Amino acid sequence: MPAPSILTREQLDEFERRGVLPLRGLLAADRVRRAREYVQHRLARFGLWKDGRWCLGAVPRPEWPATGLGPSQAIGNEHPDVEGLLEEPALLCAVAALLGGCALDRTRSGPPQILFTLPNSDTWMVPATNWHVDFPRLATGRRPGVQLFAFLDTVEPRGGGTLVVAGSHRLLNDKRFVRSKALRRLLGRETFFRELYSPERAGGEDRARLLGEAGAVGDVPLEVIELTGAPGDAYFTDPRVLHTAAPNATDRPRIMATHRFVPVDVLPELARAFTSP
Image (cartoon, rainbow, N blue to C red; front, top):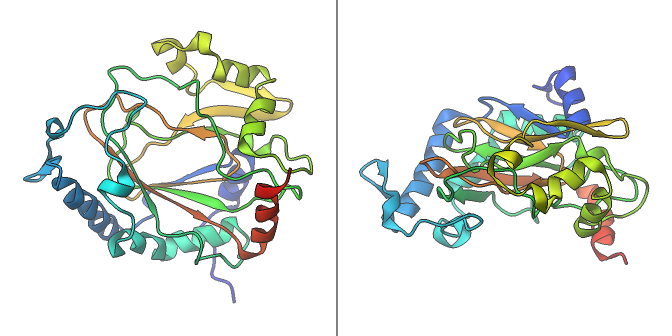
């Protein structure tokens, strides 16, 4: 018998419409604390974490779009306390609800990836560049999985949280394969995305105002939102949602973890999508 879903009908509908779903307090505090302490322990080798506090002057301050130390090299991803985040019963129950209980590919997805951004800007903006998707549009129009963004520490507004265009997963699902570069070009024909990509709108507060601006393509509502939260909070996104990195204009690093859950039976079509002309 399938496990009962922790998600309401309203939450499932929200994910269908927006491709983005926040779940506050999803992850157990003790498990999140252990994962965060692992990250801090690794960063202590560079002098960034000492005596229970951040010492950000220990390394040169990066300048946006640089984010500082590369997390894979400086922190690493293969650690039991980080991988343990994926064994949270509530998390797995949410994934099952969002993917209709499909069997998951747990062998090729790898461990969770740490997202780490040092403070790197005095001002904050919505970037005009590097908007992309991680998975292509499939010819069947099927969702290729779900992506988790988990907060290991507080990520405040303008603190480097990933930016996503809610609703964008519903565009260009017209029975063909479309990879990220082509998707960006095709969407750029629409007014909403021309504004988003516009180099003329490249400065400071003007681009900051793009956050939360309502727009639409046809009958699909769109909105740029920032992933922020407290330790234990999580977002699930549809991998077809357009997203990008953002500056960190606060005085603390961003520490998050991300992971993609992919159904086994979608793998053959994904392979064709990545290799089709």
